Length: 249
Image (cartoon, rainbow, N blue to C red; front, top):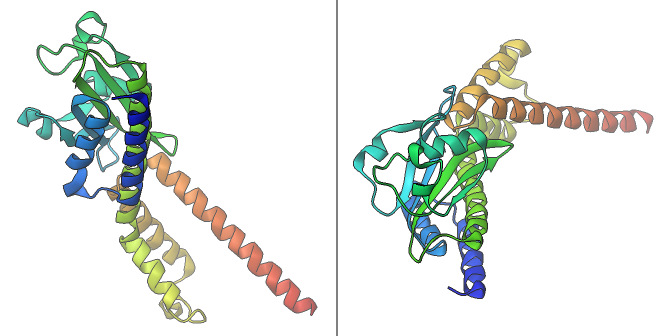
């Protein structure tokens, strides 16, 4: 593949991925496209499991190329295997020959050999997964492949977050907010039957539960809550300014 063809393929991959964020049944097709782009026989996507387990663990969710059945059943800890190493250190790896590298002992597949690339998926200053690429179709992976793999990983991280946010959009918190927005703005929530502090506690519990189920980690939930508080504060400030203008007129 020429440099021009590679750039065109990467642009096509990015356009298709952004336009059609993959649902669960389409993940393998996306990974096959990524493998073709990176000239690899094997490309796997592992994401941090949808819970708040500490330390985090990775779960295989999509793959291009054959993998043993056990790979789909087990999870990978932060201290296990090459993917766990990348999850912990959050640094992309490009190794021309694993048999002659310090990572040979970390390989989870017996007899692993050849070149590989392993890249963290970063979103909101958090590592949400790892993409592993191996079995190059021609020779060993080069620096251009390594750079393209990092771009592909960034696009996949975006897609994973879009899917999780879409899941969140259909959560109880979002549905309650949408229903509230459609209700009469002048009517107090729950008809005023519940005190504001209790309503706030109910919303906080539901917010945390739904974001955890959507795959967000505690630091991300805190960041989201802080962002929401900031938005509410901004809305209140704008509302106060409107009232002040109305009183002055």
